[in-house]
Image: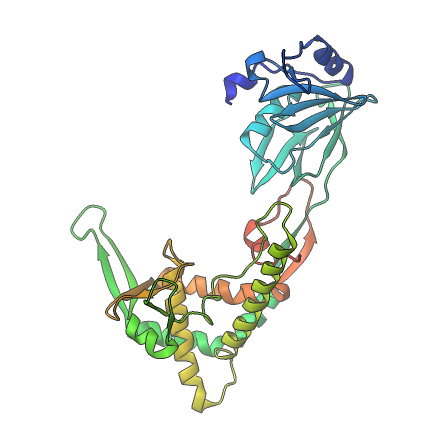
Length: 353
């Protein structure tokens, strides 16, 4: 489907015209149940029109995106498909500017932007004048904003560890040069570490790959891997329970991890804990930068090395700690009409199922 195809769909502003479009469209021969094309007959599997009681529905693929009610009300739904196709379809039929943003649909109606998420409707009616469309019903959206005071409070709990990391970086960072001598030469600081060092701290575990061994990351792989959204449509109870188990495991492991990097520890254990914490962050920071970060770190030998980009690593650490404390540092707020939730902060909250 493309722009040229959707241009064959008629522009329709009211239910009476929509009913005429339906009645004038000849059903496709041999189809059962009946299917009537909306626009070009060859595009019938993309655009169609049908009756649902007294309502006229303009259908994109299998979704009734535009529904005309007998009383003049028009209901827009995308069934969660905030796609270019959906937006082109609505803009062509109703003349309403539509676009996607952060997985949502944004419409410009009557001089105002309105956001639509999931299968929530936007209910409109056509009036008179230049800004003829007006909104009768729209979704109330909520999002999250960070509390500066809470952010400061959380960061202050780990101030001693952050100071330790500063010294850790100064001791271990090395300048790395990419494309040396070329016009696009790039220099940056990185920290290298041998896998043997990580093995000495965290040990090994049996790999799922034959008789191989893997670095034991059972207690550290949570650091940059907070489970948030449940990415299933109509999830089963088993999938919901798996998500709840993942959240519980994350909470348990992160609680144990942060207790080793929090302020106020006895001097006789603090240095060792801080060192283990820094190494855990090195291992998981390196894994997070790999395309295979969710896989096992299979150990063929202990001569392998990992590394982190210093300027990228420190912001990652800060965000990982704040994510763990998301319920404390984030405030749920009602958004202004037309605004979309901050996708960054939305990804910090574990979905309740």
